[in-house]
Length: 350
Image (cartoon, rainbow, N blue to C red; front, side, top):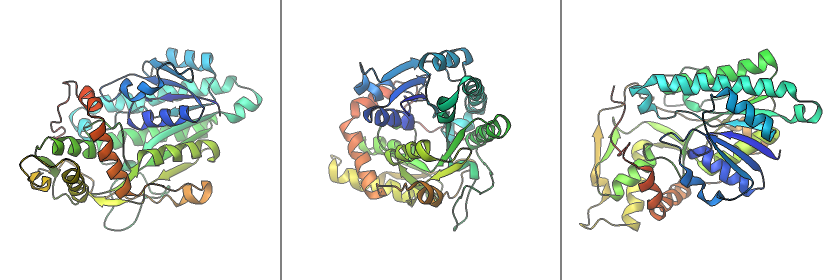
């Protein structure tokens, strides 16, 4: 595949994917609405690169998407665009339904109509890859992992909207024959993540010597996936995944939230000690839990490993150190994204 239409390619995962794809010689048409979490600074290194075409717009705009498909004739559409923060979905679920459900439906209709016009090799080659989350499966107990056959049981407004979009993708394949692929990933972390999410939020607050809010008892477990490993998995699924199939992508790195926060504290104490000599762990403050907070997620990615030969290359200890170092080295990027609309305050208290 030589040309890709990527939606949400100025966001966290999408931006990392675009940077990686262009570096590998692919042409990317990057459609992004540039909401608060979309940031062209992430793509600054691609300025003037003819293999990166940025278009500011809504992936739910049928006329715009249809024009881009006709003009650039991509071999695949990759849908990263989404409202993705659980806390924000508690405060305003309508935006999540509008973007994640209605927007995805519009994109699927455009993809279906475009695919039907293709002939021969172009028709056989075309793919629609939908990027989703493990949160659609609900919450686990102390044991077990999510597989591709785990029944959907979303608990948050965010995960419910993503589950709906996943079902739409599957239905377009079974109803119209659209050649789709779906990936459901665990919690991503790494460069260019907007600082409302746990890891960049804790890094920024700890760097400033501010209190570090930990929800509930801090024992909620997530499987952490380094974002560049996730991008490599998506590329592999796009290249060789079986049409109509779902592939779970996990980092084999289950960690309690409290452990993650304490790890960041230690790394920052080593790299940037506080002027008064305090250990940053003393800044941890347990706060009222998020409404409906899922207790544990864990991904079984054995299907992806077995069928396509992918496995994570970055362990959590290496990845979190790289992530802390990236934020330390890129504070101007952070300060520009914190433009006043979000000041690292708590959202989603219900």
